[in-house]
Image (spheres, rainbow, N blue to C red):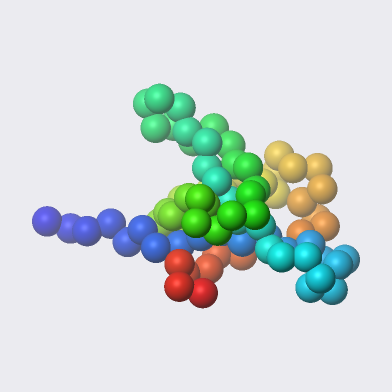
Length: 82
């Protein structure tokens, strides 16, 4: 039985604040059927969605195309322990 490598978070940092504000983390919104619908960025790391690398990349792609102010943030995939 293959295990799914779910141990990644998506983190955003505002580019203009010089590290003064804490980062925010992605919370994925899914339909009842499990279909990806969008992302909210929240401050609480413990409530953020833990996902695979491909799911995390989907979050980054979605936020870059759907969020009008995405260019103001550095968005990256991090491991849960970071």
